[in-house]
Length: 141
Image (cartoon, one colour):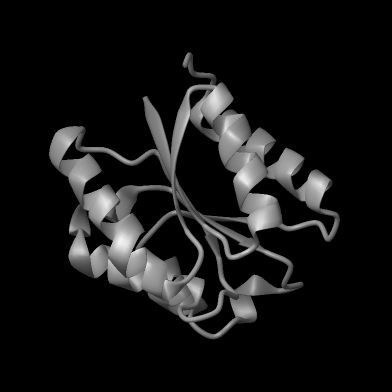
């Protein structure tokens, strides 16, 4: 089973994306801030690696309360160096994400793609789920 880590603070985007991915056979580990990342998501990711040895994709929103996305990537790599080669996607509405503070911290370590987040929630979810499925391929529940 493919597993995606989604770091997004907007529940109107996160919840429908998780439901759609689940219906397509993709497990999603989510976090909506730095506190939730430390207490919930990180232990799940570490457990996943202990059992399956893999994470398919990381989708990171860079502007999140209590822990920006670049900091989350740094903390994840510190706790679990094996994620070094997991594809990382920056999901943002920033016009030039490479100019964001912290970009250089993740750029030199992980393959990066940038997915621009539309302002309309339904379109954002549709594009995110489509991108994930194109990236990891179709799965069966």
